[in-house]
Amino acid sequence: MPADPATPPISGPERTTVPEATTAPQATTATEAPTVSEATTTHERATASQVTAAAGSDPGTPPLPEARELPSGLFIRRARTPDVKAIRGLVEPLAEARILVAKDPVNYFESLQEFRLVVDRSGPHEVVVGCAALHVLWDDLAEARTVATHPDYRGRGIGRSLMEQILADARDIGVSRVFCLTFETRFFQSLGFEEISGTPVSPEVYVELLHSHDEGTAEFLDLARVKPNTLGNSRMLKHL
Image (cartoon, rainbow, N blue to C red; front, side):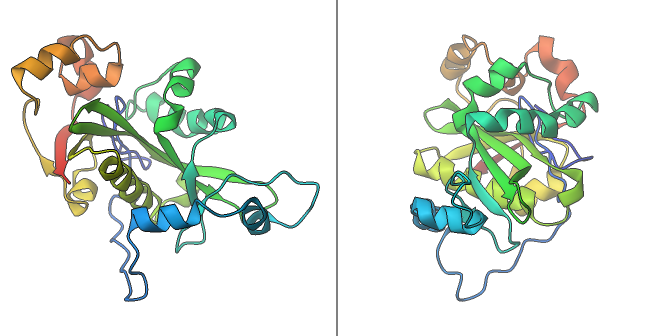
């Protein structure tokens, strides 16, 4: 669940990694009034023809998934089953560095709906260059996890864009607190997270969470069997 400093991880049962942890937040101009969630709603309702145009006008090319364009020229969208291989490709180097926790392919498919991706559409083929997931733990609590950015794209605000979207998603589904386990404390502090100690749930909820088979939840609960995965990570929480 720890987040990694080396690549752009951030948290996770899986820690979270953010390669742009030290990147200053991009300023918002007066013309950028719409919020992240508002912008997402508008752009993700684009028609198939609009989406195709964004990727190229070749009538023989299947339309790309709906996505919202970021100021950097990259795009952010929801994950789809064909993206699992690319997500694993982003996570594996971080897992090898013990920044994120390695998972079996089936785990990615089971949690696919939790993921947001940043993709590069400047070339002939769309390339997945960043990922992050929002895993709901309880009625008012979720965790930001599996945040990773491709090494070649660090410094372009991908981690921040993903986390802003993850936080907007959390608000949309009724979550009021977001937890992360990470090495990137400065990055998360810039997003309003604060370091905490212990597990921020009542004893009754703690007992209920013990029934979960999710490794990330075990890290959230700070169970003894997963402590090797969380060494050196900070526990952080943001109130929405």
